[in-house]
Image (cartoon, rainbow, N blue to C red):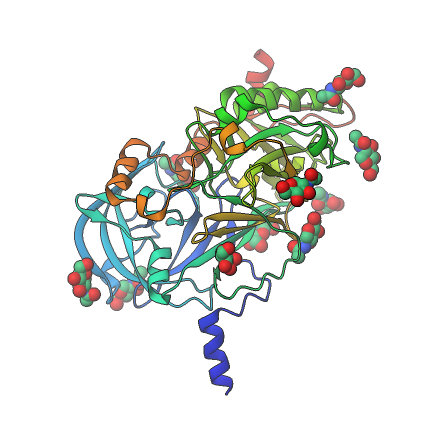
Length: 481
Ligand SMILES: *[C@@H]1O[C@H](CO)[C@@H](O)[C@H](O)[C@H]1NC(C)=O
Ligand SMILES: *[C@@H]1O[C@H](CO)[C@@H](O)[C@H](O)[C@H]1NC(C)=O
Ligand SMILES: *[C@@H]1O[C@H](CO)[C@@H](O)[C@H](O)[C@H]1NC(C)=O
Ligand SMILES: *[C@@H]1O[C@H](CO)[C@@H](O)[C@H](O)[C@H]1NC(C)=O
Ligand SMILES: *[C@@H]1O[C@H](CO)[C@@H](O)[C@H](O)[C@H]1NC(C)=O
Ligand SMILES: *[C@@H]1O[C@H](CO)[C@@H](O)[C@H](O)[C@H]1NC(C)=O
Ligand SMILES: *[C@@H]1O[C@H](CO)[C@@H](O)[C@H](O)[C@H]1NC(C)=O
Ligand SMILES: *[C@@H]1O[C@H](CO)[C@@H](O)[C@H](O)[C@H]1NC(C)=O
Ligand SMILES: *[C@@H]1O[C@H](CO)[C@@H](O)[C@H](O)[C@H]1NC(C)=O
Ligand SMILES: *[C@@H]1O[C@H](CO)[C@@H](O)[C@H](O)[C@H]1NC(C)=O
């Protein structure tokens, strides 16, 4: 009898219960999960990425890491010999399509399934030094998967759906930095059964429709600085939809992307928001240099900071009603990202430093809600029903969701949002075309963010804090400026 119950449980995934964190990452390096590949199991780490589709794994030693998948050692591998490739905005890889067994040790109720894998054999600006991950777990739809000549690479989620013979959803709960003194990020990734899900978080779920099934494309109505944090009702009363803004934000696309660090905005709105934040910061006791606000540089202090800065609001189209939106409210802890936290230790004589980076960046035309916009929320990606559900979570920044708010007209037409396409419209041909034309995937941004600009500079507080400099070069540069 017990055995039967256990069986049922594993089939119906009843074990959502215990709070277990299975995602970890260093500051700025997104969230990675442990995966076992092949037989015997080889354990590696893959970045959890809603901005791409393919499971792609390093299969060769790199300059900075000798951790990779040893294909020769797997007795269960099926090598197609076909070449596949993917291009990102800042990097690319070439690989070989194989299939093998995939198992996530932390997802105890999810069976091991045979899945397509792209074994990366060559790459350019893709892997990062010291990143702690050796590949990507793409969670998006087929059209943004890796391709090759006459090759379709099925995603792990699709293999899972096929094996279980029903659609699966997934949920990301990203919790940001562990504590003020440990910048390691943590969170949880869960697979949810569409037919049997008990959500233990009683906070209200707000749903936004997935407008197109390529990336997770959503309708972003606006992104703005909130004037009064204490009274969230302010959003409903005083806020008028800026038609130009919502049309611009969604003109190319707006996506939810766990593989991107920042909230990426079209230039003019980046500028507008950052101007407001900067002016609010000037009003408080903290002076932060413009390099921090406008050029993605790091600011450091000798002790952890408590920010008295305004909250950010992100308004999303509501799933139920076309004339409604709801609001993600992000405290400064979301967008003032902790990138380093080091308490001095007497032995090593190291200086204490607590460093931050702005979680916003200017993009070209698109809008990307990177994981900065997801921390503090429990985000459910319902793939079959085409919506993304947001609710406040019990970890991370104290972010919240409010609404829904009504307006008098259809937001879809006001903001010229695309109508959701039926599934059949996503043809393979279109998929490949899309990939060739717009191959912008998460990790690309990530690399862009991390590259050479982690250059420290001086920051000053108007009152009481001593100055700190993190590198000789920065100090010299600052003085001569
Ligand atoms: C590969 O297999 C060899 C021999 O079976 C073993 O010694 C080695 O540790 C394996 N390497 C990995 C990475 O599993
Ligand atoms: C290997 O893959 C090919 C084509 O993908 C398939 O025809 C073949 O049956 C597979 N072999 C095994 C052992 O799974
Ligand atoms: C990677 O880091 C190692 C030491 O951590 C360093 O020696 C190496 O030059 C770095 N490689 C690149 C490409 O930055
Ligand atoms: C930070 O937290 C991680 C995860 O719990 C842990 O592995 C690591 O040792 C911690 N680092 C420090 C400096 O305490
Ligand atoms: C996904 O949405 C469908 C339809 O709204 C619902 O039946 C199903 O339970 C949802 N899945 C999850 C995991 O919430
Ligand atoms: C918000 O509330 C806190 C206390 O709850 C208060 O100290 C602060 O001044 C209020 N801020 C505004 C802008 O009303
Ligand atoms: C900054 O302070 C000035 C004067 O106190 C006020 O007029 C202005 O609105 C404040 N700006 C912000 C962004 O709070
Ligand atoms: C840093 O360490 C000192 C003692 O080593 C401790 O008193 C202080 O509270 C720590 N700071 C933080 C922010 O944890
Ligand atoms: C519900 O949201 C609140 C914050 O709004 C949070 O404190 C609480 O932990 C959340 N509950 C769960 C179960 O996540
Ligand atoms: C918003 O619209 C819905 C349905 O159209 C209605 O039930 C609800 O009462 C309205 N809410 C407000 C605050 O007007």
